[in-house]
Length: 227
Image (tube, rainbow, N blue to C red; front, side):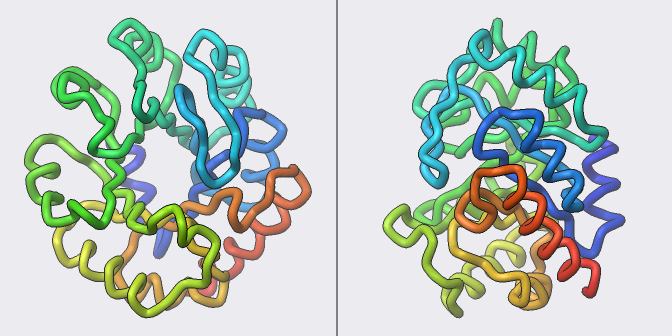
């Protein structure tokens, strides 16, 4: 996972855009705004955007178009209650994705043993104490997805910062914070002080149009570049 490691190591903070739809126009807008990576999805209903994503066959052409449209690493959420099966993973690994992503309680054990792609593992607050075990089992990046659904879109608070900082103290792996809370660009310095490696912005702060994604991504890019 040299490319991903290099990006996290070289940046004061890495900016990732979680696409609200598998749409190459949205991916291009994210890159125009300054995103370092983008993330795509299959096999799930995205809670923040309300968008549904089909299986690999249904999303294949859109995913290939995104991979062709951008020159930054592209990740793939491989599902939720249902995830990509082994045949789909064989294809995913040949398509050019830079990493896969899923919640720990959705990620099949067999995938940890066989996947050749780096693994970003999302953790909920209820089991953050298991992060060292996940690291031992092959987790490569931590997604600190610790905000309960009923608090999505609320302002960032001190408790959130404390949880993020606690996770960073538990591991030397890159810690990625998604905008489950409505994190503002002027709060990025506090996230950096907490130790996070990357901010993953999504529909809660970016909206779902090309114009809004490019504009908002640029605002976060400017704030990160001031660190």
